[in-house]
Length: 184
Image (cartoon, rainbow, N blue to C red):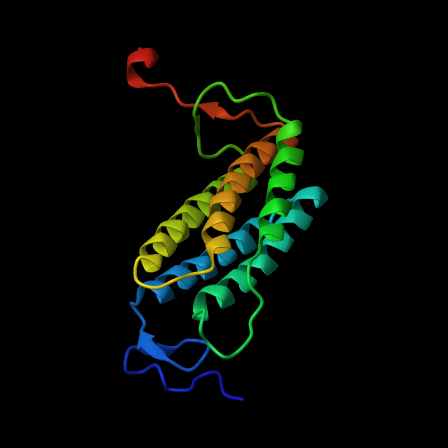
């Protein structure tokens, strides 16, 4: 099987269900950004990742494939694809609570960074927030699975806590944000 089909050479792509839309369509932008997020998580996983976190991030990568298919499939399409559910959101919340239990309370805003893993997770968080904004935009034009948006919101929360946890696990302190007036 060839990797190229030439069907997108005119600037369109196919949704699951057969309809073709412009590659700049908000639906395509949203699931394309979910794909980008998955790649950023792949970069994070290429480094030194504690086993507990590796399992959570690997699960999230698999769920992002489900989310991508969910976003690529109109609700009225004939093909069945797995969809993001409330159970996926609940699992993220349990992960957030587990990682957060190991951390000191957050008393200040923090700067993204610290360990290499934390920095990658902060990048993933910002890509996740962009995907969330794009799903919100796409949802103004057509209906989406209500759990998709909640999932992205919760995943960005998990990535923030995971970045803090990664710093903690690597013995690196979070860097507090110090406003200019306080810095002098």
